[in-house]
Amino acid sequence: MPRLPALLLTVALLMPAVPPAAAPAAPAAAGPVVADPGASAHGPKWELRWNPSPRKDGLNAFEALEDDRRGSHPEGFPHVYPEGDAYRFDAHLVDRDGSDRMRNEVRGMRDSAGRPLEIRKDETWRLSYQMYLPDTLDATTAFTHIWQVKTSDTGTPVMQLTLPIKNGVPKIEARYWTLADNQVHPFATHDLAAIQNKWVTVTLEWKSSDDGYLRWAMHDGRTTLVDARADHIDLYWSEEQYNRPKWGIYRSIRSAGLQDTHMLIKDLKAWQLGPATPPVQLPEPDRSPGAYEAERAGNVFEGAAEPVYCRICSGGRKTILIGGNTYDYTVVRGILSETTATRQLTVHAVVNGAQSFRISVNGADSIEVPMTGTPDRITTTTVPVPLIAGVNTIRFFHLGARTPELDKIVIR
Image (cartoon, rainbow, N blue to C red):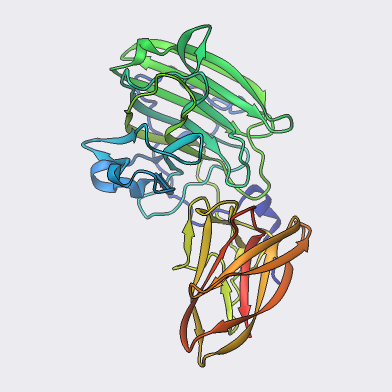
């Protein structure tokens, strides 16, 4: 099996380099430019990489949509949508993303050609946008997050804007996390009431590095409300994946006084310090007869399940976050068979200890596929499956626990 170039340890970028552009001026309300600490006066310049239009680009501006992904409130759909020149996020008391929380968010950024913008190791980025929080969007005693940066293979957020109650006072707070101890580190706050029911400008700038920094600034017109920075912090945790921002309302339902509410954001812009990072070519997927990659176009990725990078996998990708509930699953579609017969299915996956899939062929009763392995190699297991003549589908899921991470399947 071909392996990815070593450069994928800083995460591959599946898009051509962006042509050089004139360095944009910083947003008027964003305060003074804070350059990378190591950049000289004649060093790299800020290049505008993203400036979506809600009217023109719609939700295609984002890499993925998490609009009531559990289907808890179909009458409220859509919960995330363009509204005029802004993006609107609705949150209702009946929305659920699990037993104790709700989530209506977008994640990641796509350029005008639909390619993901990946924030990779040692890159410095700045996001700026205008935000409207109504007074119905409360600070809470549990959690209410309105912006995050996460990586797909780590549940812990890298950084957040959140709405806590501090000493009885509702606040908006900037914070980052440390992965080793899973601890949160607030570094700046502002009174929430002072920014509700008006448009304010938010600027977030950070270096995704083992020794990075995070700056948060917020302005009401030309008035600086907060401008704070945390230095020498680890803001890059993944060998293979990349950092990506998320906007929306993600809150616990275990706080008193919650209301139906919403949030608006507009005038989104993202700059990168220096030119776009050159792309890294992934190895070819397995194109042999009977081979079907987990990330294949046309497959179904439901709930949290999604294809991500994998340096040891065929085609350089795998599908993660399958199982653990009824919602997170993937379906490999378009499996061809010339006859109706029992065939041999070999599952290729990244396994951490003893794990298993449940698989259902064409909607029939499921069977268990147990696997035992280590995450540094591909593990295979072969089971018989009944296929029909023509086109078949196989659903990979598990109701009780996360499954292995699916690389590909081979039918013989």
